[in-house]
Length: 431
Ligand SMILES: O=C(O)C1=C[C@@H](OP(=O)(O)O)[C@@H](O)[C@H](O)C1
Ligand SMILES: C=C(OP(=O)(O)O)C(=O)O
Image 1 (cartoon, protein in one colour):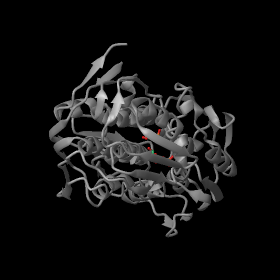
Image 2 (tube, rainbow, N blue to C red):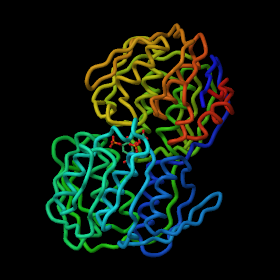
Image 3 (tube, rainbow, N blue to C red):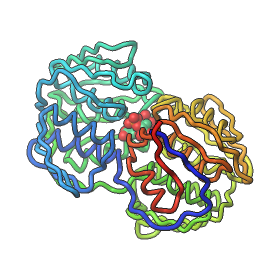
């Protein structure tokens, strides 16, 4: 399905933020790894969170869900002996479960998105699992991947963090369940470091003890631990909300998003500070972000690694700013659902934006006068490209047609409904 985004000068109204994808995947996993009954209030519903639901069920968890909560009977440290798992296009779900299936005799992760997740690298995690005595069959570090675990051992494990933090999160989830204590040493750099804070927060809520160095480059993990069944509440999602906030920032708007915690550990809450730095009128009080956009924005410089999943939305806002913006330290955007530097900038250029790329940087020469639009956009299977190009389309002179916009459902199925509720002129069309 495609979406036509028509120029929309004004947005007004209020919406409740979608529930956090990163917390939902983590809580589902922590509940599955507990023996006993856990409850998760307000879990996210999206392709990625559904992939985690499906896989933990396949691994032996029992799930019962109503409109506001999910109740999970976990399998503890004894997942069912399953042959195959399908994570869809969900990178974090795949990596976390590659760790957990070190407890299973033999599981194959199938390749259902050859042009997206199928192209993403997992070598650093495969290498770490090898150090734990887990045999891994793979296609040059890519899917399909077979994990032959069952005999996984703790000890001294080294993992590179220079491509993704998800490899380290995967090890942090599984090592507490091993018979041996572990020391995890992070090699090279650790990208998306803030996300590790979310993993540690969830593990602590599940009663797991981990001693982390202040810089998150080394961890002591006692073995023989048990996840405790407990009750979790999922907070609002900043990465998805960032796109709606960017849309409000580039239009004349009076938009409120509810349920966005000021004290959240989500790095993408930086969207609020970034829009403030761009001189967009807004307030953030009582978990409500209130944007009163006047269409005027100022260029900024920003270390994008602090807010990985909001960078595309920030760049979309910068397309209309006065001056040149620079988003640096963003090389790992190249290893996401698509190459979020080259592929994304190609689509922005088609729409009329003036952008440049470096290996680890996005540079935006702002066009406050607007961009031309009137073209077809390739979604590259990437929900964040779809959301960001929609922001650009709202302020383009001619409509944008975003092909295969249904991939927005990877994280935010109700994105276009939310925009419509705020008055955006967006419509679904069949190909
Ligand atoms: O751990 C997680 O849930 C995630 C970590 C980040 O990935 P990287 O660590 O690969 O940057 C982020 O981009 C992704 O959407 C979710
Ligand atoms: C990169 C993302 O997700 P994942 O790595 O889990 O596929 C994302 O949600 O933007």
